[in-house]
Every structure is written in C-alpha cells, then in structure tokens.
Length: 534
Image (cartoon, rainbow, N blue to C red; front, side, top):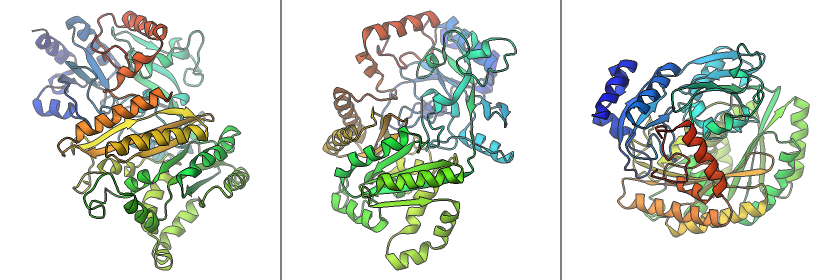
C-alpha cells in the first residue's frame, strides 16, 4: 500500500504522464552493459528543483528510496541501474535549461539535463569565443552527470570538477542549499569564486549520495589564438616508461596544458572497427599476428598518443619545439596537425594511399573526432568501440544498453611516472588475456602529477557465459590492481564494496554525514558506500 500511496502523491506533484511504471520502460531502465538484477519501482520525471524537493519529501514520508540520474548514459558503470534493489529512479532529464551565461567572464550555469551537444550548439549559435570541454562519451550525455563523477576530457579544462562553482543541491530531506557564495543574497561572485567563505562543501556532493545537484556553474575556456594537436606512437611495449617520463616535465612546467592521452593498439583498433572475426578465424582474444597486420596496414604503434598545444602563435610554436625536443629518438612517429593540415590531409587521402599503401582515410576517421575533442567538440565516434565484439553491424542510432553491448570500465589512478605505467600495463594485459579478453588500455596524463587509466572490458552480452567471464575478469583485475596500490578514481554500481578497504575513521565520518543528511536512507542507498545492503 505504501508504494501505491507514494505513486499517488508523486502523481499530484508531477502529473501522471511524468511517472513511468509500465514494464517496458522499467525493463529498459533495468538494463546495463553488464548483468544486473536490481528491480526499479517507477521512474519519476520532475521538471524543476521544486519538484525534486517534493519528490524527496514524499520518499521520506513513505520510505521509498530514490536513485537520481541525469541522462542515464553512465555506460560501463551501471547505466541507469541503481546500486540496490527497490528504488524509484529520479530522472532529471527534464531539468534541461541553460540558466545563465557570461561571455566576458567565461561561465555558464546549467541544469542536470543539459547535454554536451546542447551546450556546444548554444555556444555555436552565439558565435561564442569560448570552448567547452567534451568527453568521448555520447554528445547526449549530461554535463553535470559527468562532472559529479569527476570525469575528464581533453582540453586544459579537462579536469571537470576543478572547473565548476556554485552548486544548487537538494538534500535527501528535500531542503535546498546553495554552495560557495551562492548561500548569500545577491552575491556577485557566486559563479566566479568557488570557495566562498567558511567550510567548502562542493566535494561532498560529488561521487556521493548526500544530495541531488540541480544546478551548477561551469567555467569555459577562451578559444586560444592558436591550436595544434600532436600525435605520436612507439613500436614496442618497452618504450612506454621512457615515453611517459619524457612527457611528464612538459606537463609539470606548463608546456603541455591539457590532458595527454596514450592508448595501446587494442584501444586504437577498437576505435577504428569492430572485432575482425574473419581475420581472427573466430578466435578470442585477438591473435597477436592479426593485430600486427592491422597495425601495419593502418600505421599505428603498440602505444599511440595525442595531446594539444594552446596559446598564442609564438607560445604554440615554442611548445611544439619543446615537444619535438623531448620526444626526439623516443617515438617512431611524431606529427602535428592544425585545421589547415587536416583539410589538406582529407584532400590527399586517396593519393597518399596509392603512394604508400597505408590506409590514411581510415586513420582520418579516428583522428578527426579526437582532434575535435581537443577543441571541445562532442562526438559519437568513440561510442562505436562499445560494439567491439558484436557480430552485427553498428546501428545508426547507438544504444549500448539496448543492443546488448558488453562494457565494464576499470579506472585505476597512478603517479605520473613510467614505472607505474608499465606496472599497470603488465597487470592488465596478463589478467585480461588470461580471461580471454582484449586489454584495451588508455592512460591519460590527467594532471601535472597524476596518470588516470581507463581499461575497457568489451564483449558481447548475447553470447552465453560472456557476462560471467567479463565480470570475473573485472573482479580479478580490480583485486590485483588494488593489491598493488592502484585504486580506481570512479566506481560502477557493481564495485562499491571497494570502499570498504578505506580506513575506518574516514568511512565512519562519511556514515555520520549520511545519517545526518539522510536519516531515512532514501537517497541512492549503497552509492559510494563501503557497506552494501544497509
């Protein structure tokens, strides 16, 4: 009876059309890119902060937990599925307004339903001189959703949570708070000075279940006078440590201001095409000789990287000189690309292939969207890699959940040092190949001192037994990485128990905060909590 009464109460607030309870909608929301069995009671679709507040008050009244999502495209980490069973989804997609924008001070204030595509088009329509930072996820993924998970992109503003300010948060009890200077009436610097005065609370609401963020200010990057991308590769595994160590000083001294991404050959091939079933004779994981053939045909190395240079023309020219100097003799290929060269490469693609035998058009398909990401242009191209092991063609409208794409992310963090890059590569490669999975690895020089790694475990959920094999590979890999001291920066709904390894005093503090803010435990139970099932 409590559930029926809660649905009736929510209907009065949202209207019946904004509460989904039919089996088809619930089944879709209960489907992720790996096996899940959590059941969802209903999907609530509020339109504004006030309706979010009322939904939470009703949840407290009837003791039904809510699990907030922004756009639900948390692929590889759980999609829309809650951590625990029996929650109703609080779908924030209708909160999709761009609230405020300032060209001169370079900021925008958005709601959780605002997507990468929406903000990019907003800036383009205004011929803005500002760039956003984009991730390789879908253009229709949420800006706030990614930021609250501490996601990252490609430009100098790639560390997303480091470039936000002034949150509006609905607490589990339904109260609304504003962080920073936003808590003061008519504060002029609320969107500009993140710390405010007194204790800084913004971090409490990232990767947590302490509140629902309904508004956030993001700082935007002024478009530089000059931009060049650079691409490089090495031929052997043994060159990885030297490569990382050569680039680190340039990241530390500010020559390279943005994230630098380094991906292995598996990562590159998955970005170009689906699994070569015919060439591999139906075998998995991918035989080394087949990989070698593709690497030769498309001219990529064992490790391949990209980064961006931003600034005045003189600054970019000097940065280019320093990158060349640092990588001289350490890479087999180093190329610089700007808008003019990219246009020229597209014109010369066919003659280039005739002259060299190399598949430049295919490489341009990969290079062009990565080049765009370094300028804050969202792309769908990276999403194709989730169809890596599927034996059916990639559909025009991609939806990894619907299409039974298997995807589990593992995201360890390490010091920005070559020996740690080598250690992680060895652990990942040995572990996943033992489970008959390809070790698709990218390593990102996320900050001046930190290496953020993302390992893609990609498979086909339609193949019987693959869900179990992939999860066993993930669990084995996570155990070995954490035992070696490499903990993930982000967790999926299936791996929150990793937090139980944290020191007791820290966990106790988080639990005291949770019980204070959410005495009835109605907001996202189990999310980023080391004690599951409570």
